[in-house]
Image (cartoon, rainbow, N blue to C red; front, top):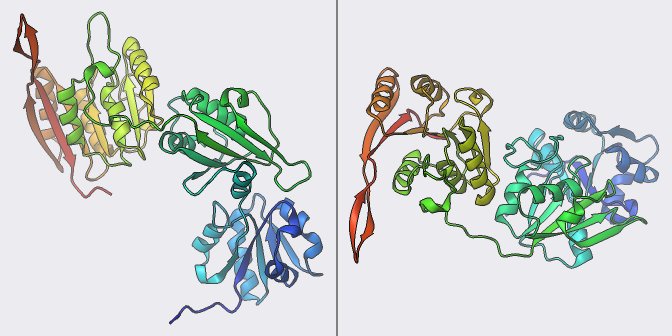
Length: 436
């Protein structure tokens, strides 16, 4: 038995397409022609102006989205029939979820239309049931560069391109198809994807450009109204996420150094207690091995790394370029400089301190989220003593020390011997409280 209470005067949210009234069915046209209050974007209001009844109040929501719930409330309190015009399906990156959040679901009656993404897929015959929909309709953050933070408007798309074989993209005037193509080139994904751009759908000037190479599309210009389809032409990589061999990473030559060895790295990452969405700091990144492996373990999170040595910073950059992750930002500098700009971490790894160890520990534990973990690696007694003394002076922190010494087999004549690696102290500290 349906016990849902229907609102006697709901706000009607109607999806329309760019052919205007031709995209509306009989129910939508009846709602629209009887509306006392009509809310929509400038272009949408112009498309349907002949359908409004005389005297209907019009509200242009362009640049005034925050005012829409107030307009709806006012109309309903005055017992006026209210219609909000949306593009395509109002529940797919549209206005309906926003209205539901600020009003209530019962106050809305939603009549969806086809989305422009569905139409674009139909134009080129691309099945979309397994595709990932991404909106890049965000504030302009400029061109994409490798290592851009989550605040960049193309970040979600860069992440999705690493995890999905088909992507349907709602663009914006700033994050245009050519900028998206340049992002793919910058991320080394240009040969892995083909593009289609559908412009001005359902309008006389409609144009669909299919099977574009991102390198070519990066130099093209497109109409303002468009959507982008991306599909992989190479298999989706399934890389090893944890426990990579040391020779996976570029290291300093002729002497190999500043890499956390595989055995120590595995234990350190385990003690960080990473989640898929963890925010991770890597202080003293060296070759970048810990941070880059953490980035693979946190596909919905982000790793912020810093390295002061110019040569090692360049090596970490090489490893980043080869590693196939878009959730890793590398800063050239000496901690704690630059850390203020990073979001509070869920986990922090210190592989090098640059002589600022006690200051770093105090500052990090002040920023670490409840339930977060700080893991530090030391090979000298002096740094171990500094770290434990700093931890003893801080209240509300549980900590412990693990000494790890591994030995690896090496050939000797026709036999093998065990060669010991340097012992490492792994110091772990945990902020009290439950992780979010």
